Image (cartoon, rainbow, N blue to C red; front, side, top):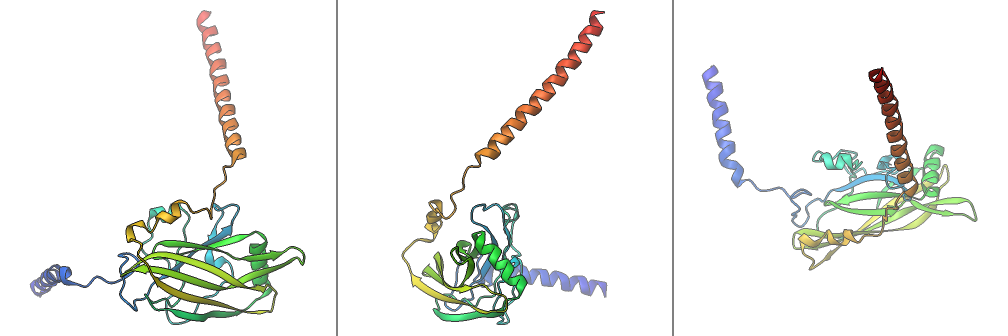
Length: 259
């Protein structure tokens, strides 16, 4: 019996070895190749204040909702590496129904009745000028949560998003997103979040699709001079303290030797 089981395992391994080279590579956001109609994953990443990009929170810490179409949502990226973790990324599957090279008219992602806690979260984000970040085929897009009317003291959240995706043959080469449709944030108000998808053919080559991010001025990281000065003074203070201790210790040793 044991010999039969072992022989079966060996045969299975042999068949896998033979068949693997002939298997069809599945189109996904790792090999970056798609066929018409293939599902394209849109990942939501993080939210946080625009003035301090290092302060980030998970996307769903804000009361955003996602479509309920049977697609798995809030699922972590299984291929996330150490680089994403160290950079503070928290990629979660959004569940938006995106299909390669298929234009989608504006559809309703979800409807939500804001509770007082939901309204407070959105108001805090809007007044703090929070942004959000998404990824599509490893290409990042950013958008602002909303706008504040300082005269009225009210907060408005963007409810309409439009994704414009450029592709060259079977590869995605550029992604842009615009936001509109401001709705005032109030507890008890029904808000509908919508998204429109537009696919455009492009002649841009796949290997040059990241060049536009080298000059991206969405985040101009300001140099925190006060923090640098504070760290510099702390280093000087610690060095001086260590030097003072060493000098006093050496003086005592020399005095003992001189006696």
